[in-house]
Length: 294
Length: 204
Image (spheres, rainbow over the protein chains, first blue to last red):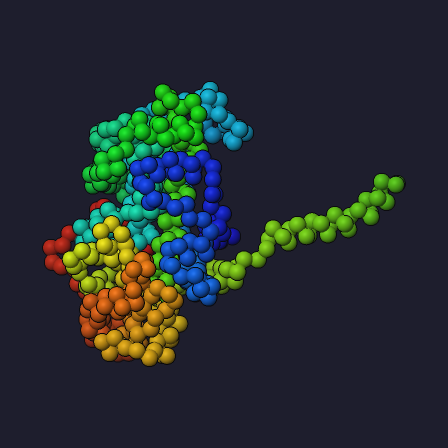
């Protein structure tokens, strides 16, 4: 059964932990992220068109583009879904029945924090997933590497909030303020076998360029190195710090103060921010292309 | 036995209820038709095989100027799009597409009453103005901010290299097969760094 992309957008949650976590980043990105839900609603917001016939025409072209496998959109969706579910597998079985009724303190009894190395790999793999998904969705815009980095640097809306969530929830909270240099150092000292045993990597490995794990590790390292400056700038320009993040997160995860390691694991498991904002990014790009092509 | 009799009477009622409930939950969506037309083994491709590569279009976009910055956004087969930013706000989108994949897009210019630089121009919806070159290449400017008016769109349409687009031969013009029909290599500035390592293969 083919994915009905319009239904995915219609069914995006309006509340819950993922949305609360993303909204907690609003202090760093005031007004940048509007939780756009609903396919027609997204079309109206992105294009400014409200005439039903026009909205229908845009939607039909967007759906046709998504359904054409050769266009890469389905692969991008798979990447966004998979990187989230693979990283959140830790301890899920033990907690499967408790979701929704658990408090953070109850959660603590059932889980061990991820070792720093696993957390580092998660961060790097998620970043690479973003680069790969970006190319699946947008192609390689422009004529040079400089153009490509300019396109990547012009992130806004849900893409920007996803990257902010990445550096916050998978970087600063578990690894600290110097997360990017720490992660780069760790990944440079890592062998292919360590990478192979990481769940997040295994989930998306087949879409990461490189003929074997060694090649994929090189690609991951290089991508991380190329975008490190971009991440550090994001953190500095938005004034993101560990203590500010904790203040924000404790607003919806009670009792999380002083339990950084566990908080990282908790967010990992319950907050599916890649999938949520990934569907939104995909919808936006498809709609932007559709309205221009019709 | 009494129980069986009850069951007999109850069964149709339950059946009707079940059908009602499932009919409600599976309410048809207005996009189900296009979904079924574009999926499955015989579904037509969304992008025509003979469509121009998106990278061919890059050279025809206007450059950044003054307070306006032109930033690459998408490049797929038959399509390229740039953002027009003023400060950190995107005020419009600029696009070129090959209508070979979307014949209806070209057909709307048949009724055009206005021209820009000699090419038929139409306003579409509330936010877009486009023109069509050689009955094939559509150039569009789409407002993303209400302050960017129709007049602004027409002004920016003229900043594209329209005569350059008019010289495109088509990626695979099937008229005269032979050496003349060979596609020209893409015009990437010599020495411009490609992105072979950082990026994976893009979708075609």
